[in-house]
Image (cartoon, rainbow, N blue to C red; front, top):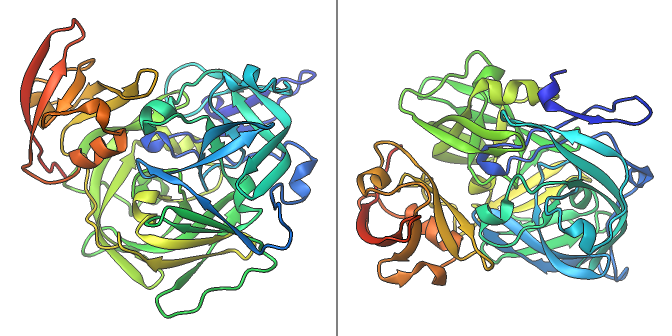
Length: 431
């Protein structure tokens, strides 16, 4: 085992290994875990009204991520990402430790992808979690001591943690991305929908994560069956790990990029495209794909796989994620024919301020439209096309920066020294 990927629990001189792979596009949180308590013997969440076969829960779609509201120990609501790539529920906002008076259990040194030092985390058991119509009377969380992922700044709304395997093993989860609605079905009462537009893909459940095997046409001559993590907590469409199969190679046309932030630093790699991906009976073409550097991923994978499929792809379908019956059902929705586009500006934004409506440039790619517009790290975007940036969500700004090759945006920018200036940013498709 490699130390940078190890959770070490110091109890009576012993260590208990857990593996983490926090990563791509900040949210590839795919952490299988050794069960932390006896709760693992049964589903932790149940429907409150036992006469109901399902409950309907609204969600927000922010930067290709599912955000749900939950109460913890009767307080809140707090915002959580709903993520099939997470093996244990996480509290990423350390301020909740005191707010909720959380009990401190086993302590861990936590490290993940990246080159920075490990951080401390601790286990907190017996937390009551309530979502509309469902409850977990006593859930175990892993609580980070530092908000190193800064999910709130990345997503643009307050994010306090992540719910994953605990939800998906409790229910058959139906996701409707266009309507922004979830339905949690009692797995014993669930009946499969009928209709020729549905396609069913078997799920392999290993290490508290779900995998699908699907064909990826890497180029016009090579089609490979690949094992991919089903990852609703990854904002990208597809990520492939070239070190997982000697036949997987970087595409000839590619863009060097910082793909995201892990627990222990930034994840670097390339962006490119694959010819197509076949998922069930549906074929999606010209997928924008992340190719993380091999040393960012190869040591943190405990179950062999070739990459993961994220919500930029999955949101194009109404989904039924059915862990209890080991299947994934998909039906195209109104987003199905949307093109797969990368950011066309060349800069990374982070939301800051008490209401997360101040937008600071974190990084500018060399030889990009942002560089040509004389934008610098730590610049604040004050206005876009004469509209105050504070009146827009980070998701709205992100969609604008992905919108159209050649589109011209007029920006008012505040330098870190307070100086204001105006510049024109012309979007350019770079990959």
